[in-house]
Image (cartoon, rainbow, N blue to C red; front, side):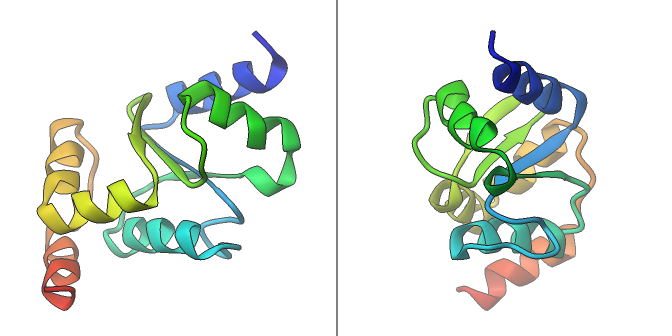
Length: 120
């Protein structure tokens, strides 16, 4: 396994929720990363952010690791969940709430409802 693959595996294994993104959760550097980080931040999810722009090995490595071509990529309890479109759909349907609840990830249920109400 390459250094990048080892680092990625360690990151997704040692953190309950990880977002591989362009930029950071405090300063996203693309609209798709901003949308997913914004949802997680608004819902009060404690997540690790990995800025793929800071390391080309990680940027390509995460695509190879997940066999998914785009960034951002969300992982919950070591499992790849999806990118921006999938996370948006899961947020709107309530599936993301269920995934967090099933995996013991703390989140603000009221905030999740407000997202759905605002986008109904």
